[in-house]
Length: 186
Image 1: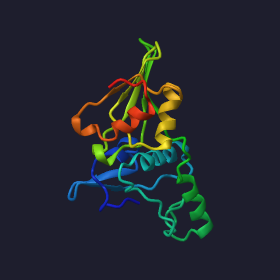
Image 2: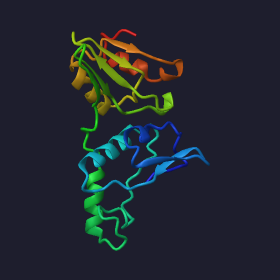
Image 3: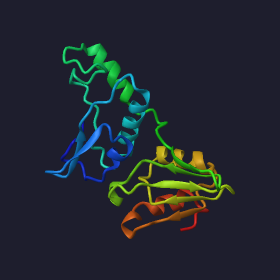
């Protein structure tokens, strides 16, 4: 479920799982319009990515509603509900997510996830060139899991080579990343 009192309408959830999240244009907030299918592993992965990336933690797992099951049946028992909810619990492997490969240059672009409320949910990502140069674009919410995601792309000892901030309001938290990735140029 989503908490519309927390949602800032940044569209992060719909970016990762447009088949699950939709915008209510009357209140300009996002909500769950379709529960993920408990048997569709790709859809479950997208739902977990949306949950992890949400900058204000507006997405919640509802463990009290029996309709949150892989069958959608209101008469499902508690064990089935529990099994379904467990499939939606983040695994810490949701990020980084490959956004695209650029065949001509053998480069890659990766979603970092861990969007920050302080940057209005700006989408942080890393571009990696064929020479290994990495650029962090915009600033993710600082956390150990976000650092692991970034370091899995850039290497744990150095972090990204560069940090590109596309808007001044997307700079929140950049000093924490500069401290963590001492060689990163902004």
